Length: 203
Ligand SMILES: [Ca+2]
Ligand SMILES: [Ca+2]
Image (cartoon, rainbow, N blue to C red; front, side, top):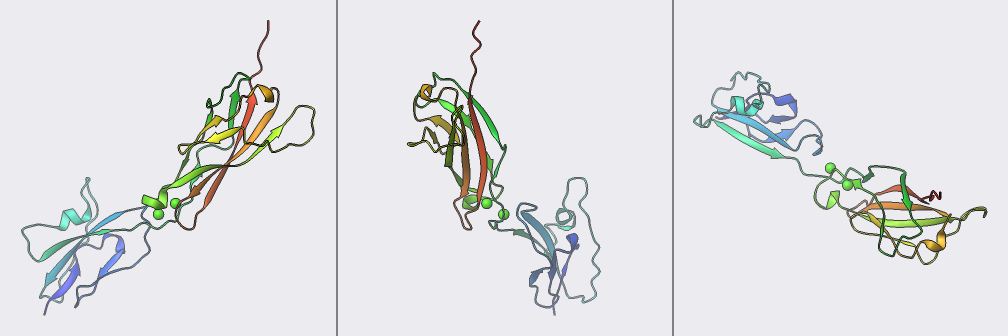
């Protein structure tokens, strides 16, 4: 009869069934915390085999310290934690402040926003969009939504002018930008970009 033991406990995240050799988990996992685990399983006819716990040491994992390739009673098992989409995108700044000139042309860069999502693959992908644009005119209470949109946002978060900006001189804008996940549950991160015109110093 063969008995199986984890050679080293490695934080107790896994256990092996002594008689079947099935490896089971003792805990929950988060790929963003640790993606790959290596454990060593010992097969022996000794039901009272004594396991010595090993810790990570000097850059060698506990598994690499107990595993010896020439010992055929030992198996090195590499366990990769699959990703779940458990992180929302996040903007690196909020709010963003941008200054433009009345001479700004169509296509000129106004601001660059950036978000991150630590998940991998589709779980880490998102798209930028402009949710709302508010235009504040000097001397006019409140704000209006300019139509058509005076700005565009690109796939890499670059906000560019879609109109000549001279018509908005002395006004200011608030752009509500979003980064929306491309995978379920499609979380949305939001940030505000405040756009003002540079004041020219005339001497
Ligand atoms: Ca995500
Ligand atoms: Ca994840």
